[in-house]
Length: 136
Length: 477
Image (tube, rainbow over the protein chains, first blue to last red):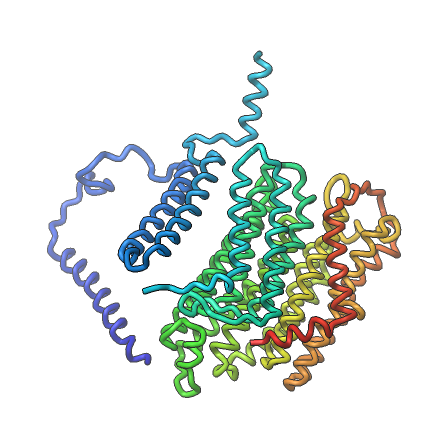
């Protein structure tokens, strides 16, 4: 049983060796020129304008999650499309149910305001409304 | 290639999934009062419970989705445990969440999702399906533990639970991978048929121990228990009740299914480990519980100790052992949710009474609260005529039959230790004078109804165990 995994081990070893060997050869052969440009992250692209460690807007993660859900839906649609003709009406109805459930999810996200890029929390909205009423 | 789907087999799961979608739709509209969501959850779980009981009585058996999903009396009995916990937790949550609409929607949604995950775990006939159920349950619970976002203790509980839980899930998944390497399949009956005493490889052994680590974390057995007190203390009290009940039962359901059906040939290896873990879990849980001054932490350590008693039944690994574990888990869920419910009932105008000394004098000034708390704690300690006694009795009996007499002796010593800290709360309630006058909120009626149901359950099983016992003995794997 364990012997079947010898292939995996050989593959792993060859993979490691390949990397080490290539790096060593290129180290031996390449010309040694060290100027300031060599230390920029993208040597022949844009000049960096600041630190990479900046704060991301957390909305990116929410949008990415919503995107992922519909991405996976698309992945499911492909195998379904292959067998849908031979499976007939049942397959059609099942996919309708599947998409309907995801649509309910999308509607939920929409109703909760998570599709807005700039989303203030309800408390902030209330505070703004209160200020507006004071101004009037 | 036509696929036959037997919808009747999936009825309880379908009812819960449908309830989930209805709750989701109702939560979208701001014009609908959100208190209705809790009632929808209770009604949906109630229908699923009724269906499960009917199917269980009729002895429904069958598999679905290429044998990946197995419905039998065992999974249906666990469905009943999960659904009873869900209904009780929803009942005690109705008043706990208050009138704030923003808090209600996702709460019941996540509880239903976790319930669906548990049902998937109990019915999983394939390690991957069990893992899917486990993740569905755990991810919902991580969010629920950190549900009160503006409360730093709750956020800390959610974060801790997420980090440690994800780590444990990785162990579990690695275990599945190694078992696949050793047995060539992830199907539970497939593993059992591929596995003979001669064909055992070190891969299987490693996979099995990683599974024990993963499960050990999810059901909080020593030495994988450290998350439990912090999470129970920080999470909303209703969620602490939920985490300690349903998910623990679900963990043990999958544990039983995998170890009794897939790996019985390796019992000589895992049997001793389970015995060792049972001893450690009981002793550590009970001894540390003595030192606690916060009642939620005390209940957390007590729930760790109860996982130890369940492991005694697992170590017995015979039919009596399995049926006693199932009975004990049902009893434990009801009494533990009841105990947390009594903690929620002890609400002063500035918050919950969390320190045990806050309970001084409560027994006479708040007779109903005193009665509920005393009954639940007596049941947890295992005094007759409560359900806790019946549960412990059958666990110990099965272990004696399997020849683990000295394990039962350790269990009995631990029961005596546990009586000390449970009774200390009762003594504080009835025999101490309060240091300061606390102002109590009026009892919410739904919470009282939930507690009365728990009391009826505890006394009913305690006085007439034979009615339930037949059904349990017919449900073993």
